[in-house]
Length: 300
Image (cartoon, rainbow, N blue to C red; front, top):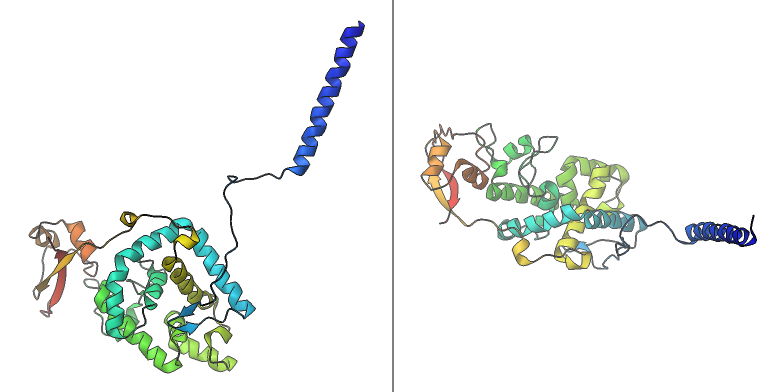
């Protein structure tokens, strides 16, 4: 082997060795990043003045603080759902706010309705329905008409009135809006039984079912995020938010044999009619009792 060629071979081996050593050292010093370098998941700082309907949240209790942080983290970093809730809140809060005031409920209970249903027309896996997620039996006990043809759990005005009656009775029973909200989830009897067995009188001192233990904190998290969206990274323009179509009311005290034909009289189709009147569950309105119903149609 010629000397120049031998030198080149040695240099090549040295170069390759140095590259290998450098790769090993680089692998040791530089961590693998699976997300974009600018993406960061930050720990959240809890506000000191959290309250539900004016009732203070005792964040100095470690368990309470952890549970509050959990719901705030979940609802902040589940960004798609959070943004959808913000958009829907802009659509329905203007309807709920005057109704809550009218029926004597604190304004914060609009966040309970949002936590219950997400403002979607879906029935839960246990059969709760409407914005306030009433069970059939509860709705009927409070005077709502619920059958295959008409389900007034889907009527915002009527169901809000019933929700207010239920929550106010719970407040009178427990002397606490927070416990009233918890009872909306677990039932008055369920809450009373737990409080009595544990000899406590405060929601934050009670050991409750997992769902009920998360329930109040989810309401509080939604209140905090929706009242301060930019603080939690939600960026949008006013035109990005949903709004409710302006409507007028038509009163009907007879049967409607064909909703499609009825809707067409007002220049709308079946789908548009059902979106405005989700409490009508079938393609017709029976109305054998000649009850007076208020039907919504577009204002224009």
